[in-house]
Image (cartoon, rainbow, N blue to C red):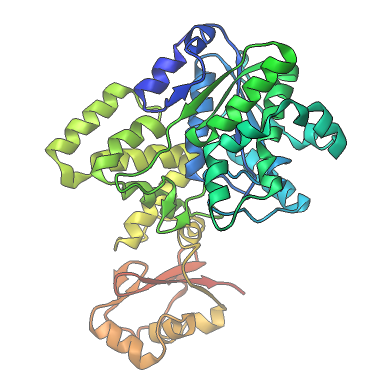
Length: 423
């Protein structure tokens, strides 16, 4: 079997293990799990570390299990948080679970004949407990002193917001998750971010107390950029793995903008590219830093993995069009995907065909008045489908719309409007 620990270490995905015997234990196939909170209906690129961890384990012959916290999501994990999360309703959790299941299905092989992946929901077993039953079966095995000693608990207790009893109980539920999967799925290894160390060790201790068995934990480092910004944030906005939340273009551009100081590390962590190829990309960056060759490779790999070949093509077409290229050869459907997050206007054929380009631009909201659009054209800043329009009074024809359906109007370099022709 491939040595998964060596792989994780070589790619910067290993922080610590709970037992030095883990390497020997992983010489045989086993089941390993990671947890995902249903705080949104889509995962973020910040979740990619755990996803890649599970994927590397599966590639090494181990069976990955993704636990979606339907129960813990109703409470909230205090790890790494300065304030308590807003509590979700059961209906919100169910909606979020459906989106997360779809996201995970893109990266884990659920039909692998050797080690098929599984998705489980901890509400299926936590939800059966009454409060008294949980205290008797689980709570009695934990000591409050040890729970209070956890760093994330101490920080919250010292903060103005404090720590609710619900959040304080989170570690008991996660520990029981490990025990349940140990009993029902043969899971012996839990993986997670470095902020999950306390939750993981709590589960290991519970298994030891109640089953007398050995279990292991492995944590990944917290991935930050060279400025200390937590990976996955872009100007305060999360980058999602769902095109409904983050467009193909925005996703692709997030990785294109990766700084030189981070890009090689990110290629190792977030892609399956061979290390030899990554080393070659590093040399190319040294020779031609202005070409941003590693950044383009990173953006291509990430977008292809998350959104498939079509998503990558749309992202690249969007980059070309949005940076001044013509739209020739781009389908109407792809244009609508590219411009999903820019202003748009639906016009009837009677409002557009035969009207002047100036009139269409005003009706579409590209300019406040005909005079403004004319001045824009005279200054060379009015574009129709990527081509500079010098005569704003020319009549619009049906074939000025891509496939007779859409046209892209641009004012200057960055102001776009998508015109849909319907009716």
